[in-house]
Length: 301
Image 1 (cartoon, rainbow, N blue to C red):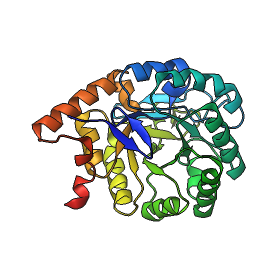
Image 2: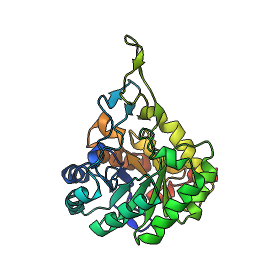
Image 3: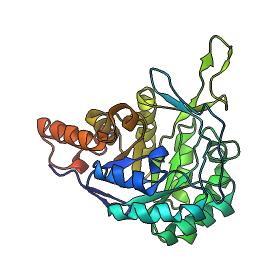
Image 4: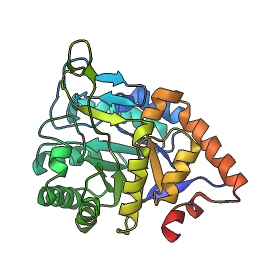
């Protein structure tokens, strides 16, 4: 079985990508994920200047997924250069996740990411727990277009755009394609909250966080299906991928690859190797020889 693939010029040994998050915080953790079998890596979201993020508690387990409100804490792009250099030793594609509060910041960080050697940039237009960033920007159609178009004009590496499950998802996806993005990534975590029943207050210091894990997979699959049905650029699925069948489901919905984040929490960093094995087992059982034969099967039904 052939599970290697290529997306927007990025050659991957398998379709499993580390999603942007805590495991992309240091170069060493990126290398560990590569050793665990990932096909590509995504850094933690990085901005133009250091950002402290939200006060603790910032992460909680709900029994049906995770809610986090880290708040885009990061050291800033200049300080992060060394982590990128370390991560590049993995010899697999390294995608630099970028956030900003305006067009200028996105362009500047993307430029530096390219200079530092990443294979592609992923524009975070969907973080649900940082005021003035992410999802708040992703709701403004013209701003999204301007950010994507200007980054695309500035860098020569592929530009990925990570979005959430908007109600007007088709319009948003077409807008991103029109701005010449190379690939759309969907979905980011969804807005969620947990209340402390004894105190009668939200558990997270930020009150609202990003809900991820198995519970959001049906939303992610539906979103990927709608996007892939309406644009010609590749789609990467994200949200609730815990096993090989989850990955196959996303690919049948139109995803060329999938990102894994919460799956590491539930199954360990070796989840990448485990899911690769599960995909191969499923392919053999169902008489598929290549991973690209699976992509978009549901769109043709």
